[in-house]
Image 1 (cartoon, rainbow, N blue to C red):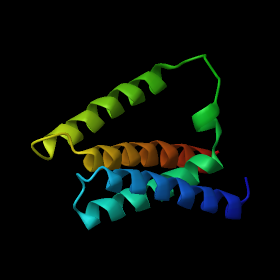
Image 2 (cartoon, rainbow, N blue to C red):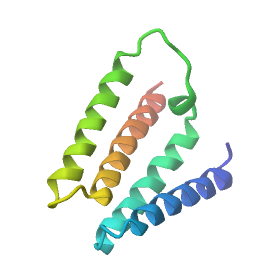
Image 3 (cartoon, rainbow, N blue to C red):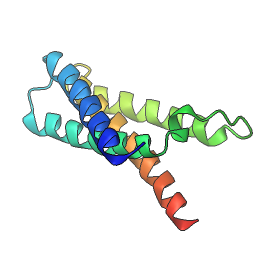
Length: 114
């Protein structure tokens, strides 16, 4: 996918996610919404550069994917419940975005080394 489409798609995805978080009414923090937007933009742009991370069908060894999914689920739920009295969607979404960004940039760095 070429850069203009990739960046436009990343901006659209991040706008949708951030608007969804803002509509929950729980996220009063502009800093949290801005961090969510920027994190999702970066993660989406890298994930769109490496679509095999999302759509790959290799079933040889799924242990890494299982560990990532389990760790991300635990981290997102912990952030969501650990920030306030009730489940905080904004904190959970930001945690998920950070996990995706870490995974995507890890794949990017591995690709650059080859």
